[in-house]
Length: 214
Length: 253
Image 1 (cartoon, helix red, strand yellow):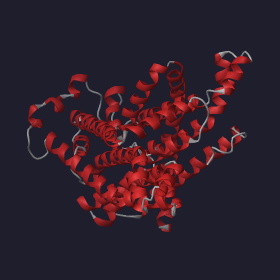
Image 2 (cartoon, chains in turn brown, blue):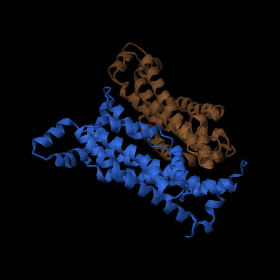
Image 3 (tube, rainbow over the protein chains, first blue to last red):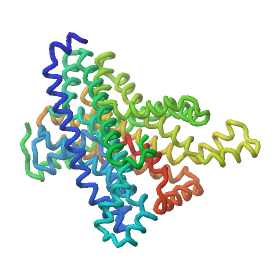
Image 4 (cartoon, one colour):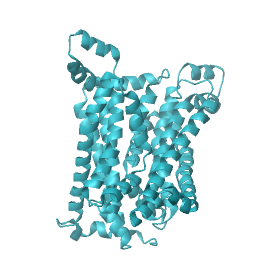
């Protein structure tokens, strides 16, 4: 095992690097799209159910299928990394629109009424009252999406772009366990590190809310 | 690399009547195969995870285990586990099925435990006060109230298995994933596209069937309580959101 890592560490590091950006760029994209749509679902109440349902349908599409439907939608080649990035962004978006909407709904109440009474306009109220208060719940959603993305990236190895997934295809071809175990361990570690990083970020951003951290 | 082709070419394989008859490797046969793997793996996983989840939830011993298996299952790369099983045991149905079951257990276990723990303690106390035995408390009070979460765990795990069974075509399993893998190998994007669309449709159909089943088995009283709780969330922040987050967690695969 140690010998395998010593002989191949530069490849392993390259795979790990690719894995990280393939998993995290979609998280950022998904958040950017989920925020306005989730907000819309709250402001226009009749949109809530259709948006939640759409998210549910998108989220249920198996990853390999979505990776390979993308070329038809985007006009990319089947081996383009863009297919993976956009697909994972779609999953993140599907998961987070509901979380954003539910988080914003959960903070409606005395604080928002107070802000309104103090003469906050809707946009300022959103930025300075609702979003900060909704942050713990939203970041819990981001944690789930990040961990899910990290475990899904390796499926991309089946179409040539899969970060640590390349270690799995290599292990399968050679009939070796070592690369597969290294890949699984690094993938799980990466998920744990990102999860903890988001928890720490949340502690910094919402020092008033230690209860919902868990 | 396959270059993009005009739109009408995408549907070639899907619309060819020759692929819709019943023969080895035809669309209906692969569909039934895929459904078979999925149902089999989920049933085995449920037989393992439901009793353990109920026990842990009811006694509240080993909660640590249930929560951590749930989290670890979410972080485990499905393709990695599949590859490991194949290298250890060779190709074939059994190694693939073991991988599917291992991936299907955590969502069921975690949400069954969470569902039982989320049951209103005063309702459980009332059941005990009425003179119910422990098993009666579990099956006549706790389980009916925990059913929405238990069902959502079963649905998550069904989707997880359906998705991973697709990937398992890479290591020789049948099912709809064959169209994706074989199509890629032969550079036939219309076959790949057909497989991808069929897998997506099957997953969506399975999830809708799960939602239907959930409506059928969950008592109307429990359903209403659920929606009332959602309404109340508008008013004050509650800790509910964190427990409700868990079941949606491991859906995609």
